[in-house]
Image (tube, rainbow, N blue to C red):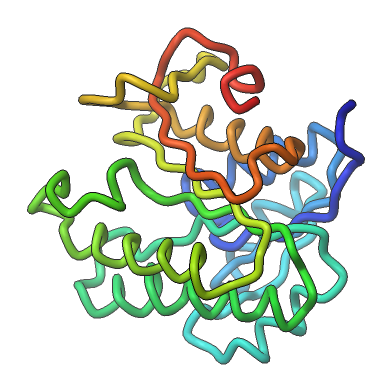
Length: 216
């Protein structure tokens, strides 16, 4: 039985995955609010009929919690993008992520989906070029698993591409995995509507299994 439509807050909605995710959630019939960093980002979403809210990951969890009140689920797709130095990776991808989890708990939102990275849990598989990003993901994911009571799902996509979506993924045989950003967004939508994914970590790359079937 398909889950009922949800009210979802997307943190990092202006990112490459986030923009696709809010669009797909709206198309599915969910009520979605796009969490943005700057007011000038709002027009992209208003043109699609999607509500926005400014969400500052450098702020306090209590302030964030006010914005999350009344939602069924939160999806974290934010990231520093590796363009502003390791300090911002620490403040956004790690501390910002943890504060958003605390905010969800303050607001009473149980469902939380984290878009992480493949092999984030295994230091031996981290690439040197973006090692600080993996460090941030490792500890944020550990906090989510062990320091919260949230009904979480952690998605671990391989290297992200701008390829056309295929609607198909693989959750095994993950060496050298790549995946289209649109398929990552589709997987996030799918896990929100699949209770069996709660408390699960799901690695994924492009494959030949339809996304909803692979998620189940």
